[in-house]
Amino acid sequence: MRRAFTLLAAILLFGLIAFSQDGEKALTGAVASTPPMGWNSWNKFGCNVSEDLIRQVADAMVTSGMKDAGYQYVVIDDCWQVERDSNGNIVADANRFPSGMKALADYVHGKGLKFGLYSDAGTKTCQGRPGSRGYEFQDARQYAVWGVDYLKYDWCSTSTQDARSSYEIMRAALDASGRAIVFSICEWGKSQPWLWATGVGNLWRTTGDIQDRWQGKQEWKPGDCCNYGMLDILDQEAGLESYAGPGHWNDPDMLEVGNGGMTTAEYRAHFSLWAILAAPLIAGNDVRDMKPEIREILTHKEVIAVDQDPAGNQGRRVRQTGNLEVWSKVLQDGSRAVVLLNRGTTDREISASWEDLGYPAHLSAKIRDLWQAKDLGEHKGTFSATVAPHSVVMVTVKP
Ligand code: GLA
Image (cartoon, rainbow, N blue to C red; front, side, top):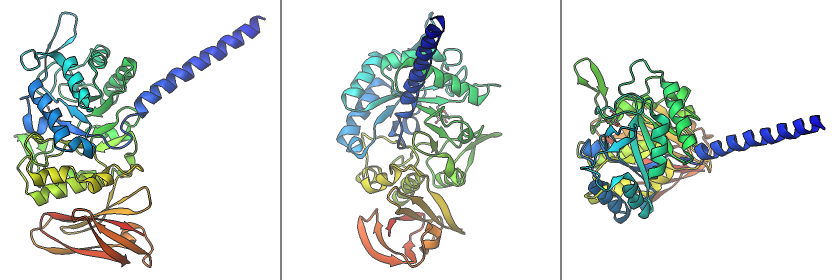
């Protein structure tokens, strides 16, 4: 009798553990099955954030067609927080967010969008605001109460902290909060998060910060390395392909499209390359005031479909000859998305051979130019195009 009771208790306990583990898995695995898409305040607005701005951005996400194109998360980066109260609760800047975070999250949700916030694994954020170190569970509970759907978690003021265990603590805290929250790891690739962060975060930054220029790395100040141009970031993605997949993405940082430092052709290249990389597409411009050509880039359905392809493969650089490159991404239906990139300053012909794309040379395949939205007919063995300086041609190749 006693043995039967013990057995029953053991079965019940096992069931309970299995259930709660499943519950947690459901929580972390249900989000970001394709690369997250949204908007973040940092690249354009820095510390100049407020509830008025965020409401206007949420409105514009809908009216501009960004929401329809797939952008979901509206994320406030650094500087929304000012202090902790006497109970240790994180406090939003009451001058800039007088209605409070819950009301703002409700507003964003009311637009059919999702709401995100930023914090830091150390004692202070990169702008010197309170970080989450030692308050991880309390902060995660607060985010869940406010209705936060996305957390970007930075790496300033972390002293001798271990990256993996620091991010694992916040992972556990988010799970314990009971809310499905996308977890965006931002430690700039320092501890090679691609080796440990699957199952911890849904995306992880692979590099230092992007800045709004085509190419060229710069020290922040003498001895403090570095921020990067778009191509410098691209170069650091080559070789990381195998670590990305549904629920866990390499993050080459947010988009600069529309911020004014690059030409329209360069922005088209930036967006095409992020799509071929299966990168998170987090717009970083003023979506309330977009030139038509910028809006056209950010909402381009066929290019976004490459990024969001459900197989979740990150594209690879399959050929590099001086300034001329071919990048290829295997899509779910077996076709390829291909970017021909001309980094140089004169018109050049670039060819993608079927061998580069992993196809037998005799195969006949349909080519479609995505930016021109134009079918280019059947090709065999190779596809070539003239590519303007600092530009791309982006096609799909479908046998
Ligand atoms: C770091 C991050 C940026 C941004 C700033 C905010 O530099 O990498 O993306 O969040 O902090 O201070």
